[in-house]
Length: 213
Image (cartoon, rainbow, N blue to C red):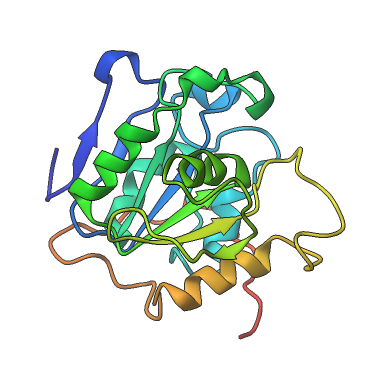
């Protein structure tokens, strides 16, 4: 734990640590770590997963992070967690009993992020049902909070989630861009006060270009 960061690592066999801190601008919550992420020990590390690219292209982060740099995302006011912390694999392989909605809600109430972005509808449905809002969710901002945090649902950036329509939109990136606008990432190059800036991208790497506003 450094510079105000809170890392919950290895608690009762967590597959991946939680990267959380008080009063973050945004916490991204997945369903569970994929097999590749579990093997590598880093979030969204599967082949073809575009989470890190989408965060950069939507101006939610100032650089395109690699999975191995996932802890550095705290420096820009963004945290990472999952609803199922002790299981890994695709959503259809995660047993219902692995979801710990109570623990997730308790963490959100403790750390008070301004926004939660569920990465995919499955994690959002688990929490929505638990809070009594039912299982019907759509991409975008939701009408229900978790504790005091506003809620947004993103399409999964997994390589397996390829289709022509994402709730009326032809691509996933536009949902990330909407989240960036709503959550106020107007100056994504400004680190959270008191935290060091992340290392620059590796030499020779050229990040993809962002779309014009």
